[in-house]
Image 1 (tube, rainbow over the protein chains, first blue to last red):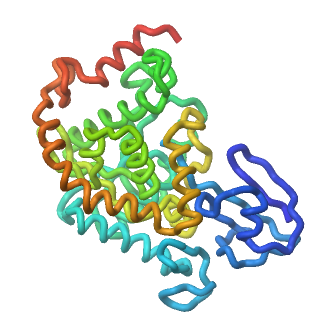
Image 2: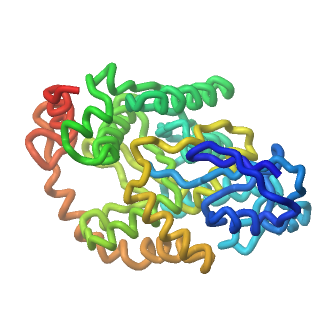
Image 3: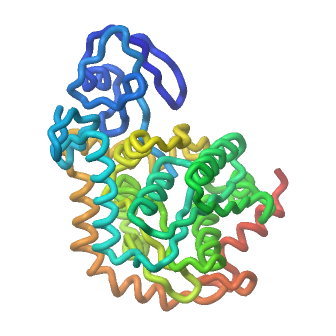
Amino acid sequence: MQVHLHNPKRDVEVTGPLRVTDLVRQLGLNRESVLVIRGDSLVTGDVTLADDDAVEIRPVISGG
Amino acid sequence: MKCKPCGEQAVIEVRRHRAAFCRDCFLHHCREQARRAISSHQMIRHSERVLVAISGGKDSLALWDILVELGYQADGVYLGLGIGDYSDTSRTYAEKYSADRGLTLHVVDIPTEHGFAIPDAARATKRVPCSACGLSKRHLLNKAALDGGYAVLATGHNLDDEAAVLFGNVMQWNVGYLARQRPMLPETEGFARRVKPLIRLGERETAAYCLLAGIDYIIEECPMAAGNRHLRYKETLNEIEERSPGAKTAFYMQFLEHMLPVLDSVAESEHDLVGECSRCGAPSTSDVCAFCKLVERSANTPA
């Protein structure tokens, strides 16, 4: 699946199927610090992402 | 995962509440958390006009939306900080939100009105940009509230912001700052009442609120803030939170309940020291306030 990341913006390829929590862990991210969006929809940690899904990992931490 | 209130398919889990929510129940949850914060800390009366500090980011736009949904008379104020493309883009999000909903947004552009940008001020003071930025925001947002006749200035500080600030203040045992770290600072001579209605929501929730409510916001981080101490404290707290959901809430809420009452006398004695700036008339502990000094130093420092 194609995974879009921010700060800096980049795309990475990850092999599916994969649970959301496992994807976040595999990317070395903290699940409290991101939202996972499949297509246009927010998804919970137990959802299994398919190999052909387009996924965005959106950071939620701001430093102001 | 099912929505805890209604049993439909959930779209977000909030581990510290041991709950997951569908879209509609989540939006209700966020508004309810803000309503509880406003009520328990006596932040805003329904008859009062509120000025919301808008940055174009998720927290401030979520706050504005929630206050309007709760029935408050809430206008926005955007401060142009002069941070290149970042400021231009964030202003676009603020203006689009207000235009789409027919809300009033005041704009104060610091470079135009005060002759310096935040990066200039950082160079002039030889301190981190966030220091000059925070000082300018505190001064100019309060001024905007007083000039506009607003009873209350509301900011989008969330649970993560407050826990990180608390962590930093405890690391330094900065008792004066701890005494002033309150969800509601009452109005005093020269100050509008300042309130933080999002203290019961984490920033993962405010981001999800915007996404689910159809609010576009600037996702990119401020280039001046990258790697700052506040962000490092947040990362540290989130490492604890991941293993112990609810740790941040306990840290901050127990501070409010158990420590702030102990610090009341410190807050009162600090307030006794406040006089008036001889240049702009703002509250100040010295003859010339920190913002007027910042304007002067920035003007005298070559770019």
